[in-house]
Amino acid sequence: LAVKSFRKKVCRLQRKTRAFMARKRAWCEEAGILWQQIEDRNLHAHHKLKEQERLLRELKTGGLRQERRPSKEEAAAAEQGTPEERMDRLLYPWKIYRIPRPKRMFTLARFYFFKAKHKRQQLDAWADAAALKAGLYKEMENYFKLYGISSEEIRDLLKDEERQEESPPATPVK
Image 1: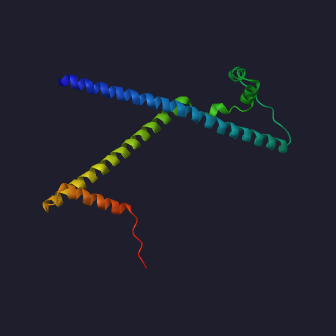
Image 2: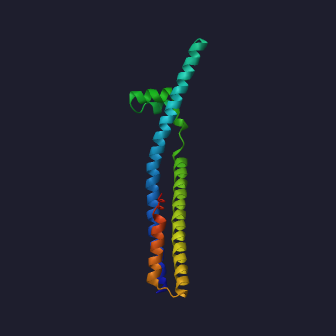
């Protein structure tokens, strides 16, 4: 009987863990796509601006330098995609500055775990606050019972007290 109960608990823990990991993986994939879009937009804009600054600087100094020839790997990579994308890759090789996918996913997973832990701590704090409030009500109820006040009267008193706390103070009459 104890083994059966233990097995059920282990299976439930495994099921919950797998569900959590699936949620984390799905969230990380979505966040990774968004991260890459934002990173690409910022890197592209930055490198385009730097290229324009370089061209202006070279025009002011009296001429353009000879550009270096792309390596075989760069040329092979440049052959893929639309003509605009090919030209963009040759002129602005900004994609080499992306954060590698494994590092990006590791960072997102760490962030997800941090947020899950933070949420768990918040839920625990609320549960502690609710338990404290229930304990205080119980203590107050026991105090009133010492003086012979019934449980129904105590609940009515506490409800009246809560209503008074919620209602705005009355304005004085002049």
